Image (cartoon, rainbow, N blue to C red; front, side, top):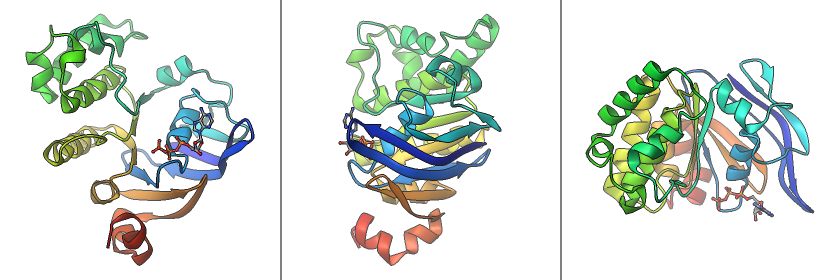
Length: 234
Ligand code: ATP
């Protein structure tokens, strides 16, 4: 579904991605783990065309994204949930959710998807009229995910969804990610919480300083001594 071939990104003289290749198949949850600064966010930004590539190619359903802008990429079915949620304060929960559907014109479909989001995240229904900035961290993550679902994505790119959340909420967010996936949305998940990411994913890639250094099934990587030492504290 998503194929990344020999991708390079530079920030001035900093070579942040040094020839990254990876794939995500339809229906999978694929995790991308790695330390701070490894290049995970940069990879998501390159897919979303927020960040310019300096080399390589990204294909989505067989079509090159090289000439697509950020808007076109959302229209094609790729939606990113940014690190730090980036919800719109001063707007209500409901208005934030509608922002996720800003490229759509199918009013009935939007109404239906709003209902679906309220069913998946009942707390957002209860707080729909409330200013989004008054939500807790976990609720804001749910809002960011609900807003992304309002674009009816084929693939959801999640950047550190568990960041800053209490352990019980981390579990809840990962449970919801699995549920969204079961209902047909493919997931590319960037996480520093390697333990949880490897537990829920089908496959994972490990990134270090701009390169993919290891890949395998979640189970294989959880058992790998190298991964246990570097990422699982064991
Ligand atoms: P984190 O989990 O901390 O977000 P990451 O794995 O997502 O880490 P990136 O944010 O993609 O890593 O950063 C990769 C490298 O590129 C780092 O060395 C970072 O300092 C650098 N970098 C990222 N954004 C910029 C920028 N806008 N300008 C210059 N350098 C940047």
